[in-house]
Image (cartoon, rainbow, N blue to C red; front, side, top):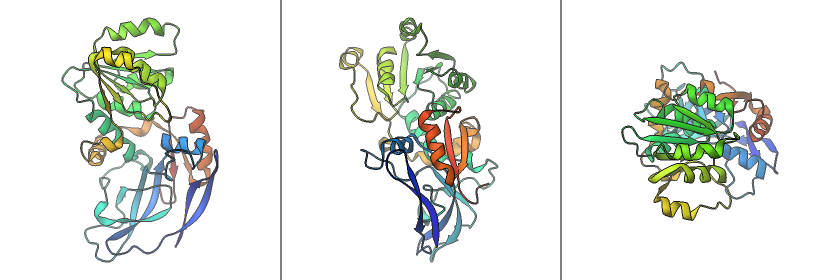
Length: 315
């Protein structure tokens, strides 16, 4: 059977391709792709091209539905929604690796983008929060806003959001941020010592940009924690004097640093509504409009926060 998928071509261009999908083999199931989220890693690869350092695979935030089971597979029901792969319409997966969406969930497929929520769980694990800690999240993009959703339901004393976009700061307040600051405002330099004086225990840098790293280094209390959550591509300069004199604990909460299997935890948080993607998934389009979504994502136009590709069969 042939199924449609995508591949990244030259910078700023993708190609729709056909891939051959065999019958599921022993111990495998065949999954029909339902949706796949567009990660900032995808945006980077689209912009820089497939030969760029650390180029992304063709999607990794998928949700699918089991449509066939292979020989020797038991206790897997056809029709079950499972954590999937990328932008292919069909693919095979090992049955013993499946992670299930609760069968009674009424959430639409595009609100079950599990993989980035699992990254958020890992990021929060690395904060090692204590009761009444004061936490700052720098960068209120898709990931930063999910982090704020969870922190806003935690035992933190203060959850402070910093961004340059007033609309995203408004969402942060909706999700539980106790204070917000616009780092592009004319009075930002006056706000830095004000925030520093609050004795910030942990600053999560979700920007993936030099400016976010600099802000985190300016506002975290002496002996506090800087959580490097965002991915800084290329050469990044860390402020060595500030880090040494501040005595910070600096942690890398990238997926490879996971402290536990965060996927089941993410599924529970989405199912309970603690992570709620209804306000964050702003753009949904079919596979043949993927490139248009990428252009909006790179340019952050039309209110873009998170794009999702809907594949055939999505509900």
